[in-house]
Image: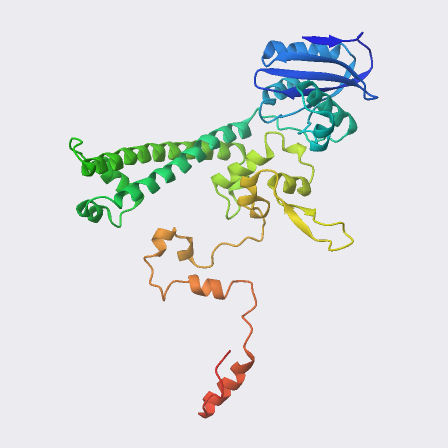
Length: 369
């Protein structure tokens, strides 16, 4: 369904408000006049109808689409393959919503107006290559890891109420061995709470084993994709397959859309924004919008060339292997106190006097502060 005036020839901008089943589009001329609107289904036929309908009004300067990463992802890919310029329109301003109301047609008009005025300039991800494949695999991987941890927490909570014999058998075991032992339980018929306390850990342990195998399989698949797409990301110290995958997800399959380090900082959620007028404090805060997983991993700083590996080989071992070292022989305290590349710690003003008094055998007049 659509209503329109006589098609014109010239330059136009198309705004699209995307939904799960239908999309609403509005065409706007270069002076801000709405020429027509159109409602299409979210399938290939509807996308072709939208492209032909937009071309009937003249040269299309750009498509401003809301939700290019969600409901509008398929439409965005279709229009990009057709050679059209697509920009992310974003959500309309709340002040305009309060004044003008909200509807699908108004949202489409606001998207076209944002693209025409230059407010919408962000180029969406193409989502048609290995980076999108990694993103999809990471969604399943991260959920499996989260549910695996939740299953283990529930298992240990259940063991608190278990019998003394079962608690002694499972004490001090690693997660893998604990899940293996509980999954091998052979509970009796359900006749009391003790029988249920053997059924429940067994079920949770089997769930943990399944999620653990699933997470490891997805980890290998993600690592293989990262090695194939960008093996150079794995060369610097401190960057593994998981961190490199997060970098690829942030940049997407068209990293040329990121023009500067400031744009990357905005994507990673670490861009500074002013907190005052500039005439009072001049302070800034971190704008936490963007890809929060990248901000948590400190991705913009992980690729620095001055990152140094641990000074001692024993620091390279996994944490559960480091415990085998004697406390007095372990280099961690020395590494923390005397970091490589840093000046020695400053001496206390009383150290010289204390050393001199100790040398001559006199008692120290005051303790070190």
